[in-house]
Image (tube, rainbow, N blue to C red; front, side):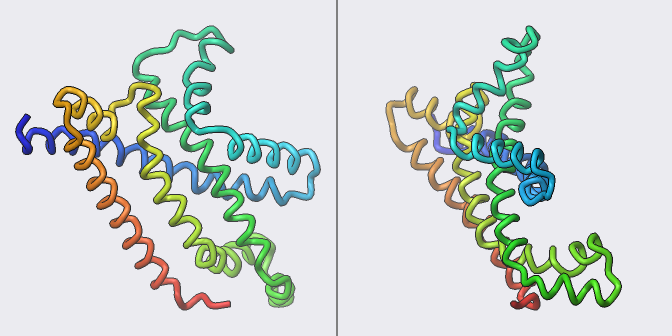
Length: 217
């Protein structure tokens, strides 16, 4: 296979990889914030359920979660699984998994904020919601950004697990080409693609972090 043709196929797989990455972040980041609220809730039952959920999602392999999410509709509800559900199952499993990690990152950031800021905001007449959105959240985002960046870099590499549900993202295509050619060149090329992807992610997040440097403390 010509180099140009191989790179074209890998680029096609990279689009799937990028789709998994973007959709996972789009849904898991806000879901993680809501889970962190549940984790810190004064309602004991809600706090317990959220804690168990986060523990299970962080304590079991993502590969297993992909399989469970894909086959659950059939074994639990008797629903027929369509071919198109594979990509949906991949996104759903990734979102549920990464939301648990983001929840703990958010929680650590929120709980690290000085109590005095809440008290000062109350004196100034801010409601709890206003205090969180206008004062606490911007500082939390600044504090948790390095940890979020690490999870995003891990997510780029974890997208290769989509092969479990036969979703042909970039690494799956690279393995197929490598097997057909009996060559490691496609795998090396895939490694370069992943490195460039992660380099771009790191650079973007570093830029965001610098833009937020005015939040100190």
